[in-house]
Length: 264
Image 1 (cartoon, rainbow, N blue to C red):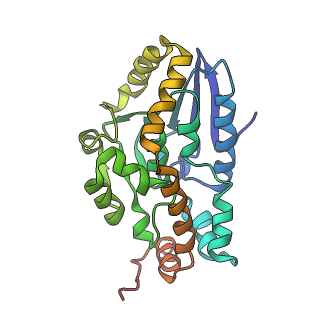
Image 2 (image 1 turned 30 degrees about the vertical axis):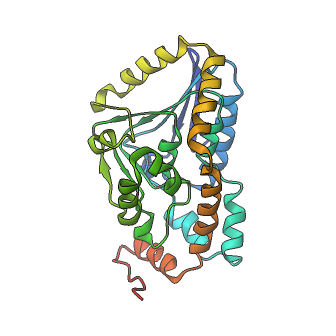
């Protein structure tokens, strides 16, 4: 199967999916969404891939969504929230990573912002470089998290830090991510592949059945009630594109100026 915005390969029992829009810091687009759905399904169903690694090409993991294309379109959708919600129902979601029967390792290089952060926290194990940064900056555009960030972050970093990240949009460093439990390892930039290989080797020594069933119960422990929360977030996220502030925030970003949000 051929792709344009991602690459997918299987070698030595490892399935590797790479976001492949380095010129745009791997910004998430409609085409990437479609390809991610197919790419993850391909690896999940390939018996030759026992462990999955997700990473980004170039200098970033994923720097968020395509603002000038996808988000701008949602802000001006004629059908409003209902149309955006319908579009999102067919989009790739981090939930797909949790429901994958195989261990998923996030090899996080550089920026993991917006949906990139949400995909990272959907991975089972997260290893990042020293230069990596994580953020949910949607609020700076007058919108909000839409890929489950508001629901998953509190489980990982605690409610207080999650509130700070989501309401300010400020990024956190790799060391902060380690401190708050967002990642399990921070390594020098030139040692990411080595660290991922060590983790992969450990997992490949285990029973596939034991890995699959262990992941199922671990996800179940965290997700009791989570998906209802994610569904609510998606519904609210879709509705926010009807607001004047969303339209203003996206327009201001594209026009390289400070947004003038409603303060009332």
